[in-house]
Image (cartoon, rainbow, N blue to C red):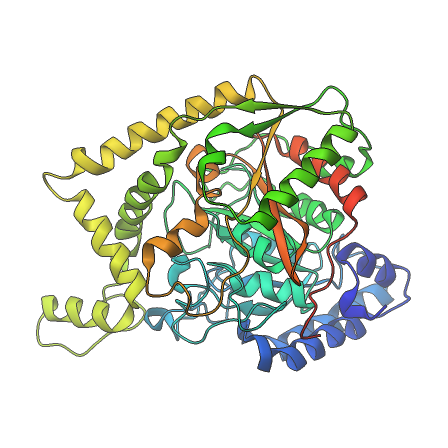
Length: 486
């Protein structure tokens, strides 16, 4: 098997046993990236020389019988809203096109402390606002299963790179489905942890009460290995939980689900869902039943209001978070004769159309006379939704649901219809609003395209959904390395 097709766990074992050097592993993945980038355009900033230098340093450490960490020599990619010391962080926006942070995001630091090698920063929807990676200011990423289709968003570059073999691990942010939706479209694992499980420090914020950081991988073992590295307390993030984390990899030993109860959300049955997605859900349901689980209906009466509430709360928080990009302190700055003109010209020239749309929406719902009518009311609805999830999880151990209502759509198909684009996150955003862990995994293929299914757990119920995923993976097998263009 070619090195770029191997898992992170397998690569780490082969490096520890000296079957392969770090330099060999890194070079294989850089070559894969170089070969595939003209087709996919998944990477904003490749880090070839930096990765080669780090590989050489790790090989020297290994020659001295040092152990740099559990991910020694494993290549990884991060979404380009993760701060990286000395390497530009653009958020796929003209606003930050040349900005170079003076520090690393905590997740990047944890990964490098574990011995992993950063090889590139991935394309995304500008400031993480989008569901297709078509809202990047630089270029559109292709889906590795069919480059004429989108990879999902906003972490589409990370998902596409992982699926195509650039790196066995990639990382993104998830505010309303931005890890899980592209994971479904690209046929890989994508995990949004419980809010507070992983530090957000050093990741450029979109909506602070909803954002969470998580991994992409092609195997469940790799996903759990990544989680053990990044899911650690961080005193620099006040929202990061100080609680002990479980031994995530113990989920790999689960072979049956006797006594477990799986919930199916009654309200989801009323939505328009592709037949291929429904069929994958049925297959997963049968696998879980065969493993000893029982399946029951649960009800979330307020979930139908989730999309509307999300597009009040997230733009409102974005309006506040992105107010710092004003042309005064850092980032893009236009020439102007007055401060007000500076603000207007900078934000007009620095932000793309989707970001402007959401900022205007967010500023409006926070404005005098509309705060209570929109923003405050949305928060009350979210509180009700969280209570409904709590009641559901008093009856079931986890929920099985679609990740997306459709298969990957063609480039340009939804770009002129924001509402249709927003509907891509219909089944993912409730987990963000309730702060719950949720995993997208590949549930099969239809007409050569991957089909994603989703497992949602109670707050800090990661082990419940990882155990269920282990059972499903044993039945369905590992997701394939992306086909079609390989």
